[in-house]
Image (tube, one colour):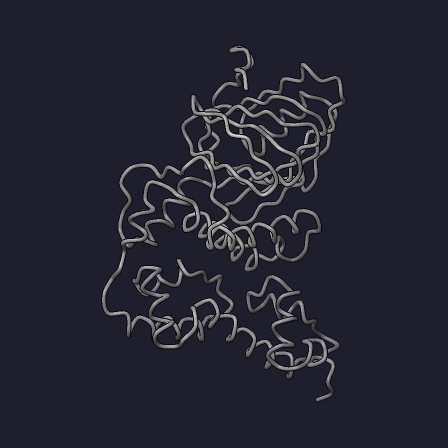
Length: 340
C-alpha cells in the first residue's frame, strides 16, 4: 500500500475527549462531509478517491456505550484513508469485504471478514478500503483501558499500554470476545434498550473492555497471566455474596476479581474448586433464579419479560429465553402469563 501524498495527511489534534453525542446513522456522498463526520466521531482523517470512478456512498451507524464509540462504517467504494496520530485505542474488524491497513511505519496487514487490527495510540494510520468493504470500528479511551488493567493486576501500570497490531480472534478468549462484539454489531443494526438503558450499556461496555484486555496480546499480557494472589477461599465466598447482593451489576470476571482482590485466574480456579462452575456461569444461574421469581410475582399487564431481564443485567434476550426454558421447562413469557 503506497504512502499518500504528504499534503494529504490530516493535522494532528487531541481527540482524547469523545464528542458528547453520536448520530445513530450518518450518510453522505460528499467526501468533505465524510471526512468531517469521521473527524467528529473518531479522529481527523483525509480521503483519497483517485483510482476509482465509483460514487462515494459513505454510511456510518454509530452508538455510544459508556466510554466506547462503536460504529459500522462503509464508503461504498474503494478509497485510501489517512488519519492523524491516534490518541485512543481503535479496533477495526471487517464485516464485509477486506481492507489493508498500516499503523505508523509498520508493515501493512490485510484483513478480511472476522479478522481484526488494534491501533494503539501514538501513530497515524493508512487504510486501503476495498470496494464494498464495511468495518466494525471501535474506539476505546486509553485511560479507561489502563484503569481497568490496573484493577485486573491490583497495582499501577508503568508506561503506556500497547497492543499487538494483529488481533487474535481465534483463541478461546478471542472467540468469546467476538461473541460480545457480535451483540454490539446487532445493536448497531437494530437498536434496542441495550444502548438506551444505562445499566445495560455499562455492562456491555465492561464486557467489551475486559474482553479486549484479556483476549488480545499487549505489553502487560504476561503480567496478567502471572498474577496469582494466595488464599482464595474467603475471597470466593465474598464474590458469591457480591453476586447474590448485586446481581444487576455489570459484572465481568475482571471486575469481580478486582472487587475481591484476586487475579482472574485465581477467581476462576476458586469458583471451579468451591462451586464446580465458572464465576460467570454462577452469575447467570443467579439471574435466572431471580428472573423467575420476579416473573412469578409480576403483574403481566404492567411489566414485560424484557423489562425484568434488563433490570437484572440480562442483555441477550434470545439466549436468556433459551437458558430459561432449559432450566425451568417453560419460556419466560409462559411464567409471566400464568395466573397468580
